[in-house]
Amino acid sequence: MRVRLSGMMFLEYFIWGAWYVTFGTWLSQSLHFDASQVAIAAGATAVGAMIAPFFVGLIADRYFATQRLLAVLHGAGALVLYAASRQTGFGTLYPIILVYCLCYMPTMALTNAVAFRQMQDPKVEFGFIRVSGTFGWIVASLLIGKLALEATARPIQLAALASAIMAVYCLTLPNTPPLLQAQTGTRRSVFQSIFPREVVQLVSSRSMAVFAIASLLICIPLQFYYTFTNLFLNQSKVVDAAGKMSGGQISELLCMLLIPWFFRRLGVKYMLIAGMIAWVLRYILFAYGTASGHVVDGRMWMLWGGILLHGICYDFFFVTGQIYIDREAPLAIRAAAQGFITFLTYGVGMFVGSWLSSGVGGYFSRTAADGSVAYQWRSIWLFSAAASAIVLVLFALTFREDPHSEERIAEQRSLRQTA
Image (cartoon, rainbow, N blue to C red; front, side):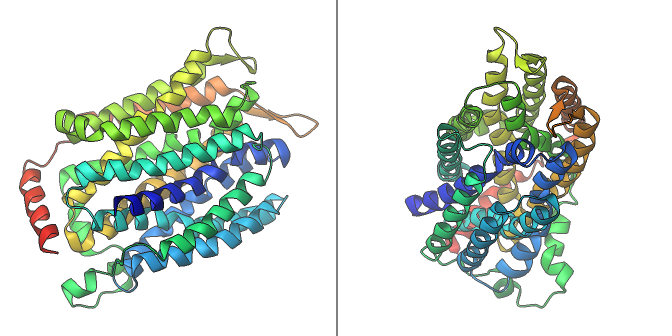
């Protein structure tokens, strides 16, 4: 079972890593999109994430087996993604990439739901399965970097092929039928199915409300990393930028394996705080590692530091958050709760971040006569660092873990064994 779930995670994140890392570079250097167009196009994933609760809460939890829904979404995504790779103008590319993101982004919560349903103790087991997704991202980045495909449409076509393979693979996954209707036996409105009242009640507690708000806010500066990092490294004359960025996923892989150890010693709050501190440091290192469009002599270590901090940034916040949600949510609405957090983070947070990065990137850039765009990278990264620091301080001052969490853990474990 662990091997089957690991294969699912590998393909899931190979797809995303294959096209998204170098997307901004292709748009800027090959298609000559301006900073606003690059940021808005990269933010299409956020729109897809905001639609994710519909698929997760209304369909997966109530009507269709999750593995079948995954197969349909990835199959459709393969066709749409290939169509996107054939476009050259913003007016035609953006609607197509938006449709693709509507197919892909719900699958992140759905793959988590499939994995969690097969586990007895997610706090211990999930990291070892989810790490295969990180490995998939690494393989995609290294492959694209070594083949020097960053400024071409080939990465998107590779992702389309992987998505088709994933569609077939999903049909081999364990049967994961809907739980909510069977357990409640009641009909709900569309809104209640997308955001069940149990989820609303869950986030009404102080600890969960603070976590949800902080998750949303921290994803605003996160979008700057996803939109601009590969383009920033390429414009800073870093060789094999995509390959070097895979170092972030390598550190993510190592950190994920250590999550059970850190979880026992730090707890939820301080793991989340450590993740946000790493975000602030990463952007500061990016800001001072380059000058005048080149890496400053002797400062490549700063760019490497910013890249390698990605493991702590991602795992200590997002993976810890997924485990925290799984621990706090009742079994019947666990997929909906994961979908709700996806809505807040990869949806609302990164949607706001895409528009903010569009404005900030446009303000700190200029377009040359040949259509190329030059950025004031230090100002962009210092803005991102300041935004991350504000969220960090607010979270540290307001978050308190629920003292009854351990009782719920024992109760949920008993329910898993019964199920």
